[in-house]
Length: 418
Length: 213
Image (cartoon, rainbow over all chains, first blue to last red; front, side):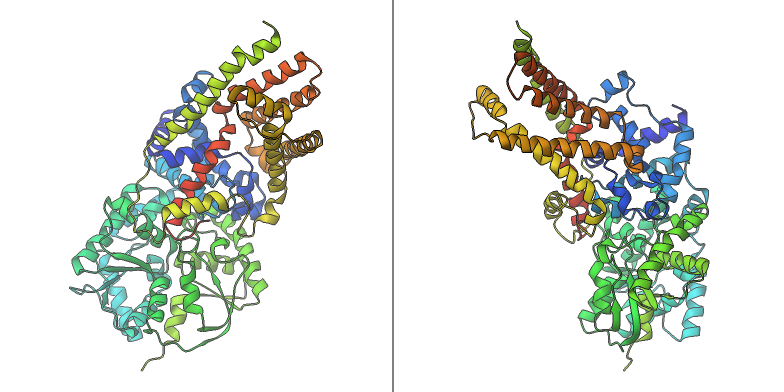
């Protein structure tokens, strides 16, 4: 085994605790996880079987840390991966896994393959193995505050422009506020109307909120790329910003992984409980609606909803979007499968940022096109800018005739102002 | 010492000790590893999620039955058949009574034959799938085939010994079971014990977030 591969495996073993050890050892190689994976579904290539993506790491575990590893090693029964093998495995750990967690639904052993892939990414990233474009984006987050280059100055410019153009008050750097709103840079650069929409809704509901240039970027490419140091910096910036404005609530915009990163792993990365509550924008909208603070005109036309995996299956907030759509969308149609079992967009887990994975992502879009067409809906909305970007890429590639939209934008467009 | 006395005496003790110590060591050495702490504010009970996952994953859910029907059906056939044979075969009941003093009603002979057919059918169909399905062919390794082979051997020699026609056939069955027991703790056959922990950990991690997949 070569030097880099040794370091990757050393790092991986350093992460393996009881949960990962049990999962690495419990797979019975039944292969049912393939049935849940969108990459397998569209290619029928056995390499994309989720458990196979972990094979070098499971093998190394058997020779290093598993019970009786010494016996196996002495008998030469477990060969550890080398540099070339791990380099080849990038495609399986990065390009063809969105960490959507659908494979855990079908696994009879209940193995959390997405969590193990996340660990593998950390170990590979710590030793420089992974897609360069994804790593570059992660580094940019650390350096300038945002993966797409939205510096604090650029954010201020963007907000000024959006505020003037759309005649909406978008508070920035208020001294004190109850709620800190964050952004996804995909929205800032590609879907700026989402920022306007969030501002309109929060103003409509009379919320005391602000953006902060201290911490505004919710998308965490540190988590997606496996760069743990970048992930932590991104979390710390939001925590600092929330603490400085005294916010007890942080609202994550339409971004699935951003929600998972802060809501479910933020405290772990920070090393202490988060000093505020975290809500995804759909959860926050649902709460406002429940409290009677959202007055909405009904939206016509058949609409279906794409569940972002990190908000629904891996986030536990599946019902929030439905609560918002209930009674608001006059002709809401669920896809099949939907909710917690929904198919991933194909671009989560940083895959949307990996250029070489584009053809594979487009193949995955074929699943989504069929799902939507089967509902007969003309419009599919989602609550994740990353999903939306991936789906828009598929739409353009196939010249698809359906509309793709944002839930928060539709809500903002249908507010009843007094 | 006859061959039968050897397999029911020293070899049996060795196999029993290796199996018991191996299984216990295997599980405890894993559980002794660091358990990842998670200070995120839970939406629901992680313990509840863990327990739910243990039962939820006994059957396909989330719309996966049609996609996994073959594996689920033949898997259950094999496991039910095997446990019926192991626990309710007349010779096994007598063997357990001899060693522990515990006894219960054995299956009638026709029941034993049905259970054996079900277990063999399930195991053969699973093994065929392992060799022929492109996915399982790709992901299977030596351990999968050795484990299946030793299980098949133990069942097959058990059938030969069923008539209790000769000590040699009984001794061969004992030896094949002992080989299986010696291999068990070092292999993927350990899933018979680890599945509970595996499902629990996954269910706890997800259940805390609000949904157990």
